[in-house]
Length: 185
Image: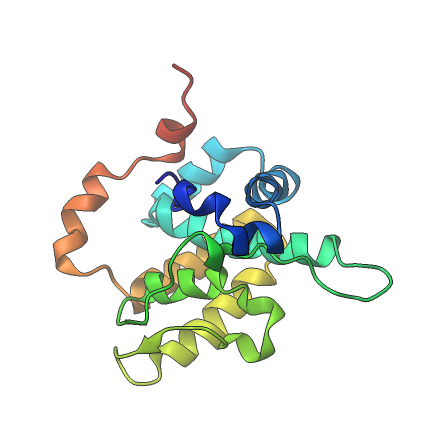
């Protein structure tokens, strides 16, 4: 498994019949190249200055760029949006109480192309109403952000409202920054 994609499932006939999985991953990376701020070092410094983990920014940026790519590659005749079909490659949790996991499931289920963002989302068993806030406030704002830097205050607000569980605090220390993930060998 790499970057959340189970490559063993890529040759599954059901998924291949839907879309070429390698083209889907390539489409995601192409969207990142088209829509993500190329100054990742500057973006990372702005995130660090306000205490936003790169992982959180990357999550919201994934939602934003995939939404933009769906809109950009819309079929001009049918109006049908491009679908990434991530649900073929990565399992979606059936239930969760973690904001990041719930947000990721909205991306996984391509929520912005579905009615009110909620189809296929896991059952929420966290703070009552928080799932609606994640979906209708944070996810909606993320997919409609004009640029990568516009996500930073959204991330900051989301991190304050939904702090990481205490058992994940050590992971923050080990979490790579954008400089570490893009460094050349």
